Length: 426
Image (cartoon, rainbow, N blue to C red; front, side):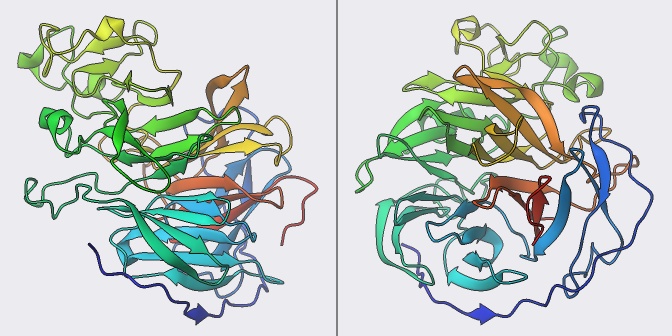
């Protein structure tokens, strides 16, 4: 069991005094719809270290503004606490940081530290759930401290697991609380097509469910390669955003031809799926397809004759993103933002690491329509220049109680405030 302790360690934030100057607007990313406009990212004095020592521009809806709200190195997932503070996980530092709004900039303190790669954060009233790499914890949240710790699920795989020998590509885990009170958490796959994950104990490439008081976790959904995005929708249904496999052979040519760049660039798409008890998302035997509708197709490398899993029998995923987009944080808006963003899903899209040309990072929005999600829209873009260079990579976006959107960025080490028209900018 990891050694951890909770303590507060205050660090005063710099005063808000100035904004950056202007620069030429970047070209819109390929996925950006018409209607987004370039805006200068406002950077308060004291927060203007790299990459904000150079003026930056983002693409946002007309009339919206974007500013650097806080600097949190390697900031990952985020959750709003009952007292209005924003909690941000920092797996690389083993910390959960608390950002409490002040008169100008938020006051930053370390709420929890000494954790093993804490990633997912979720609240159920006054209980804070934190997904570490090897266990899920529950804390009594008391504003500037979190205590009363209990372990909800332990023995989860990470790089230290004896059977993995240090080879684990997806150790970071996410957590959500369902309307039924159950705690749901992700266990990512060991690698790209490691089929042994499906028979491991506990099974990897799954979304697991456990009672809030703890117990024996059980698989809720399987074949989920890396369901980093995990959240409950307005109707209480559970959804995940999934990073699907890489280097997939073209099924039209067969595995002997290997991965063909122009095919790999756009296959398979990433998934955004509603999770129901026992849902199967196919990995590593079936992949969602974009060429013949949203149906699954067999993976010719792992399921050449279709005997491993009947891909045609799997219900198609509800929505997709471009291949290798790397969707990470997932959250839902419920009336806190102006139309047309008042009800839907926000997804932090990290951008590709293995595509030519690279898929651009962005914050995506999927409108909630008739109990499901509509197609992907770009809410914020402009993080990547035409030459593929980047100044930011969003991880998560969460609507705040003030009607703004707060975006974490582990590449820039920042938390942005995206403000709709008519809302206070500070």
